[in-house]
Image 1 (spheres, rainbow, N blue to C red):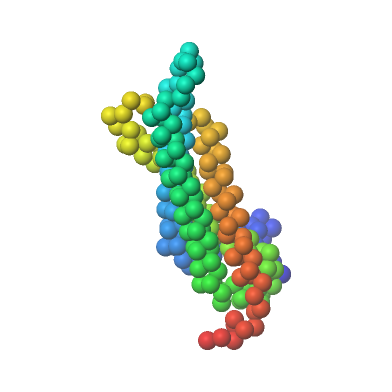
Image 2 (cartoon, rainbow, N blue to C red; image 1 turned 90 degrees about the vertical axis):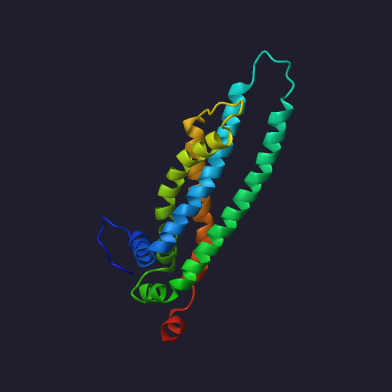
Amino acid sequence: MIRVSRQVPAPLLVGLRVIARRPRRAVLTAASIAVTDAGLVAVLTFHAAAGARLNPASSGLGDPVVDRDEQMLAVLTVALVALAVLNAIVTAWSTVLETRRSSALTRALGASPGQLSAGLVTAQLLPALPGAVIGIPLGIGLFALANSGGARATVIPPAWWLVAAVLGTMIALAALTAIPARIGARRPIAPVLTAT
């Protein structure tokens, strides 16, 4: 088992090492999450603006333009989430493949498969967090840009919607990364270290 200072857990050290060795991948992860969160926040901003525009004294009939926009945004959101899921899985799997040798060395020095897979998940989450936070103003700006000249005012969604979007993205990324990381961490050490 890897002995480290009691202040810094082993998975964090493994994650930081992976990020330090592959900074471009960390930037790619941050950019990917920023784009995903920007799209989600733009949709949330649309819903907040549409909700603010509804008149409580109205007849109860929906606005056909808003209804059509919501249908279109639902389709775009599903496509965005599907692409983000695929991107997260491919990025995690390629990180696992690229770090095979260093992961085998880490395990040979005493790290458990759980520590190693947690480290690989950490390597994805650390750069994703700033990307998710940057996605909030980008999404609000994206809606404002798409709505310039439109009838809907840009209304900032409630803070808990934005926090839920960031936390949901981070939880989904951790879950999607954990599967390839766990598979890679359970590979036998000897064949990886003897391969040239």
